[in-house]
Image (cartoon, rainbow, N blue to C red; front, side, top):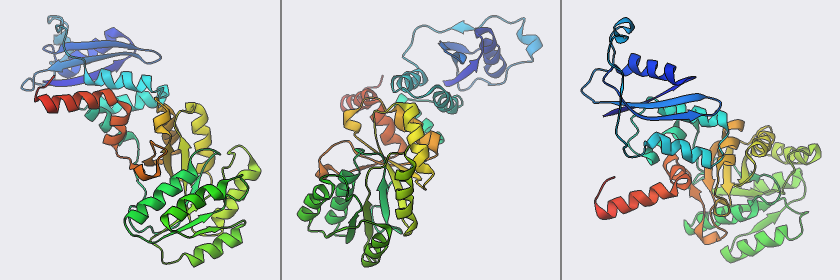
Length: 336
């Protein structure tokens, strides 16, 4: 059976689209009113049926469309409800749903993963040798220092040489926190106070598989803060990666992401996913600022590391109940 969704301002317009595209044998599976958009009708037709209807003039004389008996929830409806639950902004929500209108959605997880893959870019941080030093940037308290520690632990486990530098010399306890991690991992930590010293430290770190720079938290709305950060970035050829916690207001998250995008950030590393249940702000930030998803942190434990994001992994994080259903299905060998 082929499923297809139709969006239109009114139910009458939607039914007309169903007839024109799928013909009179189509079965209406579900209808839904969407605020600010109109209506969405999901219709089905058997695979061996033609998908082109007769001429519209002939259609008018034919019998009305049939409505199906209550059936299992439409995967597309489940995805739509998940996006609403996560607080995904309306415009982004609609764009993601539009990508599913021509897809054969077999289950909610694969449908959401397909929508995420169509709308977003996914570029996890390098697991091996990096071509450029990586500087983690972001607002205060976003989890940059802990993320540096996790990246260091990843390199240490792989026995890869890694250079660690901190510019966070103002925050009370900032250096000490990172020192505690590097001491356990038996890594040398270099601290710098200005762009010139940073350039020198990067020269010392040449030859390392990865060089990680922990920066001080910066207020994205403070011009002086952002200028200081830009001065550090200009001192050397580094890639700034935005570290942003989950659970923010979606509109605020977009504004923050845009500010860091202006200084060169192209990837978003999300933290504190274990402390949030709605990830709409992360989707909004990535989409609004044109950032690629990198990795995520879902625990404060350094040993548990980071999770490189893919469309499927993000879909499972957004719909854990569907992942649980999928796991039960595999265990019992039954299908819904």
